[in-house]
Image (spheres, rainbow, N blue to C red):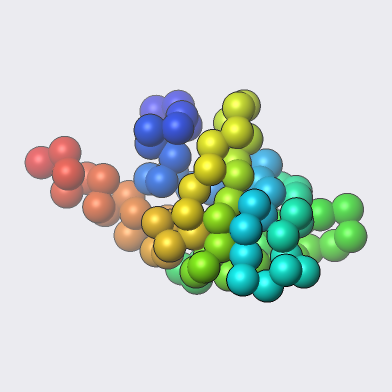
Length: 92
């Protein structure tokens, strides 16, 4: 299944280009790069200034797939495996 705006929440985010559109930590706003790892509570983004660990909670991300899609961090506050399980439950 191809990643698009309607199913982005249920896909692995690793490899996607992303930007921190909002964060309660103003130093993280504008961080932009490729997602290189994802945990339940964080995204690790590779930037030109090095790798940045961004908490999902209370953040908003813009993913480029290829157009920009905004996602609330709280909506992806699960591990990739848990998000997939939720998608499978909705289909049954």
